[in-house]
Length: 144
Image 1 (cartoon, rainbow, N blue to C red):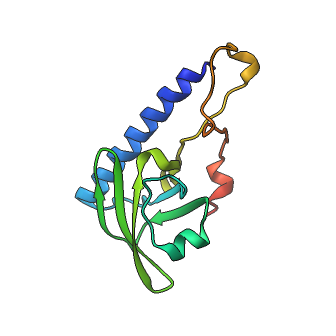
Image 2: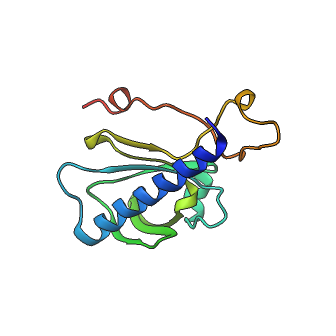
Image 3: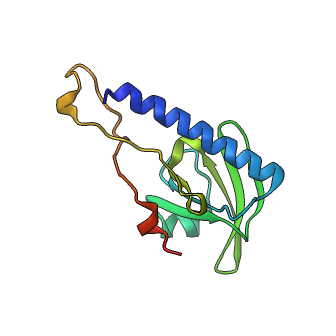
């Protein structure tokens, strides 16, 4: 697949994740849905307490299910208050920092980083270093 299609997919997936979180912020969680979100903690616009950054220097995963507060969503980022070891912390996560977004209850998975086989692409075209591939089988990752 041509690398430009990965960029289109990423943009579409980010828009979908943003729309889902906007709906949750407005209407709360519905059905049995919950959200598993991984993000790049090195992204320059991620805001998180130092104790979390020290514990998760490259990547962090959070779950939005029963215990989260103050979910605020804009077109470019979201913020949420979670509790870690009894300590409340607010995270600000730009959508560009997302690596993975899933609703395991609905078997929805949006891998937000891609790669392509460079042998199949024109040598004049480059991929972003943040584009890595992973196929995720939700049934094996989230056993009920």
